[in-house]
Length: 173
Image (cartoon, rainbow, N blue to C red; front, side):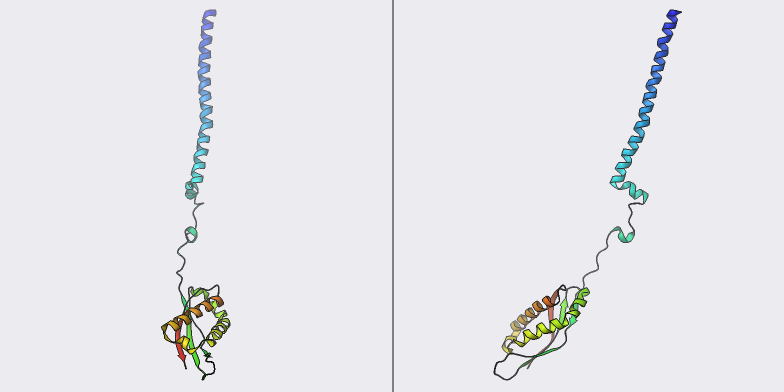
């Protein structure tokens, strides 16, 4: 019996050792599965897939992507009529009557231009009073006048951007 008991004891130890290995594998699986799930969840979260699936990352349609901004539409502002006497020296008086429109790049800036009308009239009038009738003759004279008025209008209406000055009526008498 002692030999049989001794032989039975190692078999029981082997069976208990096998169950111990199974219990160790079970504990390892119980620890590994949640760890793998946490790592997979973190990967899905930071890639943006999981918040999208949960509806947390979805933005309202209005905020999802900014739509194209409304197109910038230029606007025309009609200047009041300006009548000035030109610089003629000792000769007979000569006058200039000017009606013009100012073209601004963005129609939303009309308020800036409207607020600057007194300054625009002053700048235009003081410049025009120094002109001689000869300087207004021909297309080159008109071009120079336009360029000078654009420069002055740009200064007066800032931050609005003046793109052109259009002559509606110009009479030199």
